[in-house]
Amino acid sequence: MIPMNTIFRRLIVFSMLLQILIASPLQTFAESEEAIFAGGCFWCLEHDLEKLDGVVSAESGYSGGDLSNPTYENHSGHQEVVKVSFDPNIISYKDLLQQYWVNIDPFDNKGQFCDRGNSYKPVIFTYNQEQKSDAKKSQETISVALNIPLDQLKVDIIDSKTFWIAENYHQDFAVKNPLKYNFYRTSCGRDNRLKKVWGEYK
Image 1: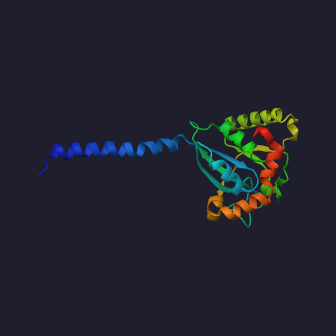
Image 2 (image 1 turned 180 degrees about the vertical axis):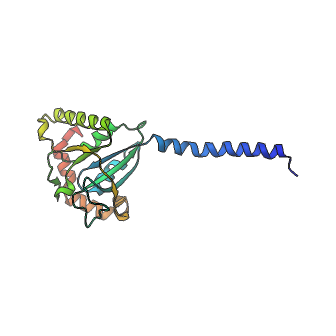
Image 3 (image 1 turned 30 degrees about the vertical axis):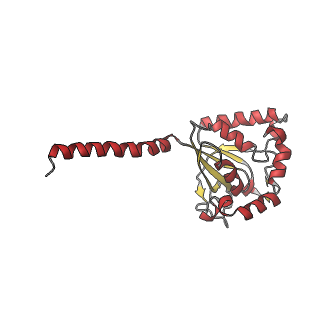
């Protein structure tokens, strides 16, 4: 028979090991922050942002409108968006904004590239005052960098609204369907337009 004090010591050791095992992911989750961006087709923006160091996840979805439970077939009033979870110890929100800008056409608020309409217009959704301030400062930085008046940048900066995750087949579309994705991205003229807008700046 195992003495009670031995059992007690083993329970303590087990408890400590369990805490060590769960502490790290819980800490990572607690420290992660979120950002929501609209920039045309969410397949493309998701793929552009999720590969960045420090990005924990990127999910395609809908936001900006009032319709509950929007779908791909009916998301009237919403934009196609990407919700990014990121580790601010690796990539800051300011750096994420920089990457957002160079992956959109900031002069077009009627859509993006070959996709036209309200669903595809570029928007920065901000969760708090700090994000809003950083977003506006980034807009000013881009204005100076491109040597254009601020009012020529057609990207809205607005308070975040409910994020509705898109259907599962939209998630990681570029990874699951590389041929279809690459054909779409090329035929839509996304990269050609980005190169024309940003040139060496990117």
